[in-house]
Length: 255
Image 1 (cartoon, rainbow, N blue to C red):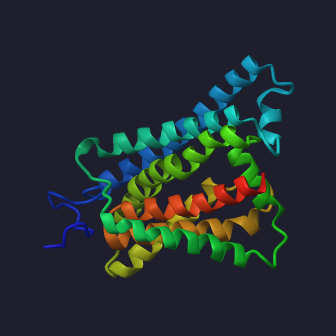
Image 2: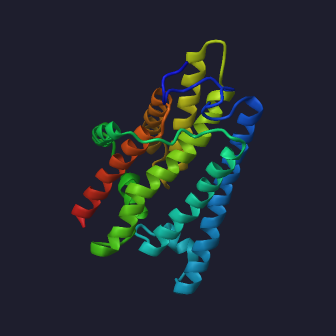
Image 3: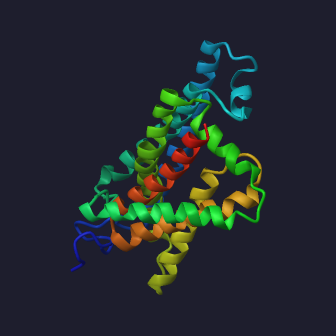
């Protein structure tokens, strides 16, 4: 019997994720639908918001802005996360578990998140990554002081929870079943790398495509490996939260 919290074989009563390939395909389709619903929600909500605010150029101008208003950032995040949360809910309707569990010692993963952020910064030192700073501005808006509090909380608390449920809960669990081969390690590696790559693509901002993607995908791969190794989402959530917190603190200090 597997140790508590570890990944258990599909088909066992307490198995994580889909129980077979058929259910795994359903989870994958649910993830795709959730992604589409999320981005449709973003378009609808930001369009309505732009009309109410009387923004010149409408939602297109807000999307292209280097520092969009705080309300736009909040609506954008909530719209995407609505789709992600829907996917997590629908995927588990047949009994599969996402492995959401946080232990007391998971707080130690704060240091891993900080190390990942510092490692990424060092890796990009030789590269003139203009898009990186622009992406941070777009994610946190043009706010400072108390106007920075809400997007900061969403970035540090909301993003790790909702995104880990989606990418490491629904998507990774489905890929682990679909990529299963006679050599288990190969299937796990393929699923982890694919999950990381999709995580990177989903977070990609405009410009500097090939410069941003490797770093974003590497972070996604580490988070996916944590979810597989521990059988829980707690470690990846804490790591993700501290990774984002470093960016928020740097941004707040620079304002």
